[in-house]
Image (cartoon, rainbow, N blue to C red; front, side, top):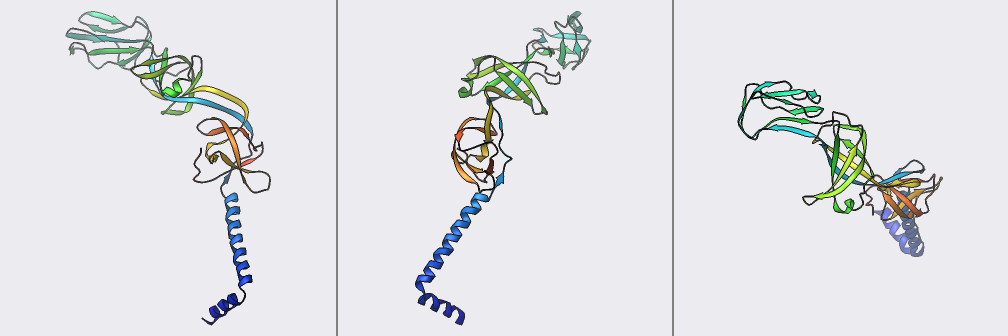
Length: 273
């Protein structure tokens, strides 16, 4: 208690000096907070000029240009099966014998459905066999209206499938049309492996615009139109920038005090805008 009384007594006798000391402590605390903020975060690698692509995204479904089904309007009996599900057949190969009539493949393809056995009776309008041409497939993408307005014939598309995420496949927009209140794009695909079957779905990115030799920064670095820049050995400073193309991960810098070699300080809990 004696020590505290001495301190209070000193402050009372030296009010001017004590007020200045408190101010200095306050300034020091504020400066420390500012410097800490300017130094905290994760630094990116030095910026280099790169390529950025603006895309429209959608979910696509694989379709077969040619498909064939055997479906009869009368009760029939399967006399003999010459194929099974998963078999590849050539044009003209025998498929099955129904009531003494031989059905043959109208094109090269794969049997995708054959739910009945030899000797079974099949009721009317049931699909006895399905055959698809796996050499001629395309993809139909469902688009949001805003994105669909920017999709044109001839634009490039990149596709990936959940089951084979490490592989990317390339195609080209053939047409854009509406169906049942949906906006769809038909994508022509080349070099699609046979393991990709009709009705499988893919993530699709249709290239709208591509720019080369531009400076790009991570989208997460944007802080209401500003980014933290660290140049040389100095502390990071907040710089206002104008952005151009934005993809899912990066944004193009159109203007602002940003140069090659700068490093971006990534802050936590930044809300890009």
